[in-house]
Amino acid sequence: MHIDLVDLFVDANTGGSHLEAAEKASLATNLERLTEYQCTIHHVEVDALVHLPRVSEDHQRARQVRGEKHAMPARYVVGHAGIVRRVHRRAASTVVGMAALLTDLHSHSTASDGKLSPTELVELAAARGIGLLGLTDHDTLRGIAEAQVAGARLGVHVLHGIEISGRYPGGQCHLLAWLPDPVPAKFVEWTYEKEHDREERAHAMVELLQDNGSKITWDDVRARAAVNIGRPHVADALVAVGEAVDRKDAFARWIGNNCVGYVSSGKTEPAEVIGLVVEAGGLVSLAHPYSLNLEGAALEAYIQELADAGLGAIEAHRGDQDAATQADYAGLARRHGLLVSVGSDFHEHRRETDRRRELGWGGDPGIADGDLAALLSRLPGVPASLLS
Image 1 (cartoon, one colour):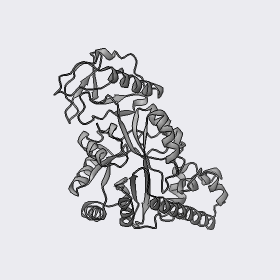
Image 2 (cartoon, helix red, strand yellow):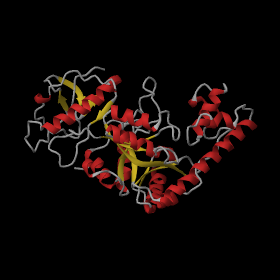
Image 3 (spheres, rainbow, N blue to C red):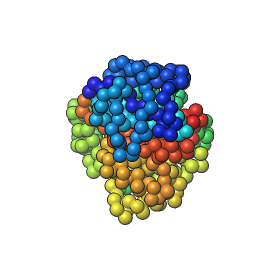
Image 4 (cartoon, rainbow, N blue to C red):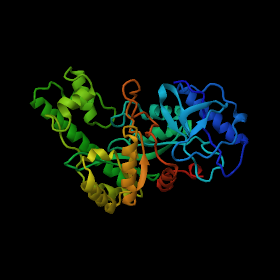
């Protein structure tokens, strides 16, 4: 998809029509980042950017920068392969999106089950114009330091994040936590226990698989994990020994729920996890709420239970949730006095087969400006410069 479009909007109340030098420089920098990631943004006349009408919540159509009409929702930048990245409005800003703050609060690296190293992940975030990144590897903080070094070099602010598995027999209860900088030592020590629990689970899976005829060994699994071993590494080992075609097949036939090699995750009750994060000064969000396998009154009751324990948000906006589902989960959050969150849950490039979890993609329509502003104001570790 080749679109010569940059949707940057001046607030309708300001009447402004000219860009300051710093704003032009910011725009140029972010255009470079997008272009590095093969985003087709041909020639943009910065001086030609003029006052455009405020964009309504029902996504009224915008004009192209150089006057042509194009049927794309306003406030979006559209790039290579049709990946859409929202340019979020900043509170109290006269020119909307000039810092091009794209926010992705849920991502993974090789510190757990992602395919990119922390440095490579941040490099991709920078290329996509992401200004605020939550690195939330499973049950570990070990990738954060490397990611923050890369972020300082590339202009990406990396939050201290982690995705924690809580005990939940009926499905999965995964909790995203964003923590202050520095992270309290007590919490860091607790994550070491979680890493150990994760390795024990993988060991148990290997034993079950061997009991059921698999030829994989612990060394096969260990060789496929850079830092923290998890179930995807067991899947990779099954692929390596020829007992599965890919991770999806391994999960479907060997280690998914109700399969012969499945071992439930999480030894800590969700309420206890939430309490530990809150005690450490962090904010907790329920990740991919569909994994609870609950609906209706049962879902409402469980969310209230988590809210009473200190849950702060629900991940309503993801690329693998359609607009109706996003609206349902955002409403669920509001009914229980919780914030609305957004994240891609990025693990690896799947652009040819599945674009729903691409880094920076929080679904369509994505998080509302007011919800994003409220979330950012509560996130620990977000610098004031990203809130102004």
